[in-house]
Length: 119
Image 1 (cartoon, rainbow, N blue to C red):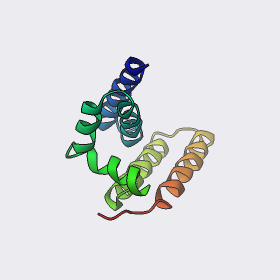
Image 2: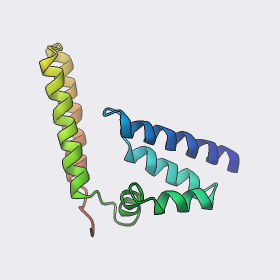
Image 3: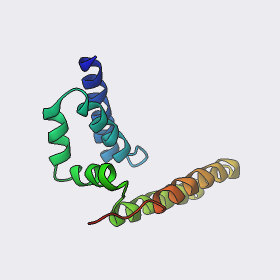
Image 4: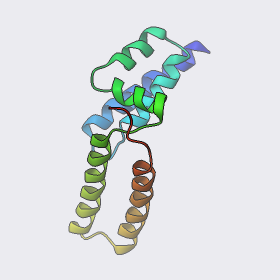
């Protein structure tokens, strides 16, 4: 079972790293998932992920306080606005834009109702 957790952790980590480069793929949820899987399979990988200078603080804030940093909230809001603006500029049909707007609004409500955390 440990190998399954480790494999799922590596796949989640890979998806998280892909999310750093591709703007529509979320990064932090995959890293949270990787931390979950590594906690059950590899103490070394779990410790590495939590001590990572870029990704570690976001994971630690979420695990200890259920919090999202103010910077992350602002960046996610900008990314959602950019996606919606690009859709409008590209002239996508209004039904698709309406679905995007509703979905992104739900994401923003969830994100902005999370605590900001101690940092």
